[in-house]
Image (cartoon, rainbow over all chains, first blue to last red):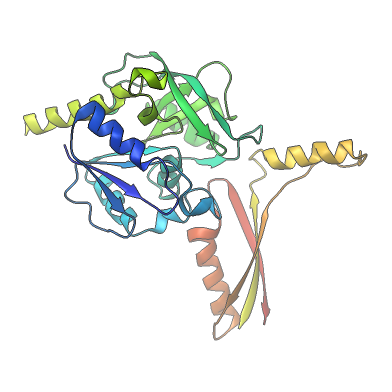
Length: 227
Length: 82
């Protein structure tokens, strides 16, 4: 399974994503500079966290128009797995691949912490190795993770199983319905504010992120095996 | 040449955490009469266009594509010859 990690000016979790893939899965991964349009050779794309384009205008708003995003949109439309983490989530929202938008955290602070979450939907390619309603811990580090969508969209998300992760305990940013991660309707694009790539081995304080990567690989292997 | 002054605001249905914090500070400064504060953005854009209709169309397009996020924001603008 070949992974691409697009790198924008200001990305800072790109290496963490690469290490997670090589450490957990031992699969090949390439950094792809934001000027590259063609991502056809990759099976999955992980849009990393950071501060692409300095978060100017709105987080993710400028990265969304990078050439590499044409490849990301194409991959998503072909049913390939696209995972957006933190700023990567914001970029996928701006690109229209994921619903909602991020507001500034309700307490206005940048929050860096280990956050308890619950896996709301474990039937996705990204979450199948978790149990339903499993309690997990992942690091968060963001100032604009206050997920917002209108009532109509929220109903749709609930009905379609697109709410994938929720914060447990105190909500770290004020997001609607404690939402921490959502998928697209088809389930092949996932965005979440917490960082699974920073929770893959014991010394990191949690290994709960590893299952997201093993889930993705298992999905791909089963898909290839079935073909 | 035209100058567009574009104002992007959070939709009234969207809570504005920055506005709420600034309201709190204004209250502690003694401005008890302040009932609400909303924070938005102002952008000045200079456009070369043959007429104000064309300039206005361009501004609309750039607001919809980039300058405002329709999920949480609204925009309006004023156009003047520059």
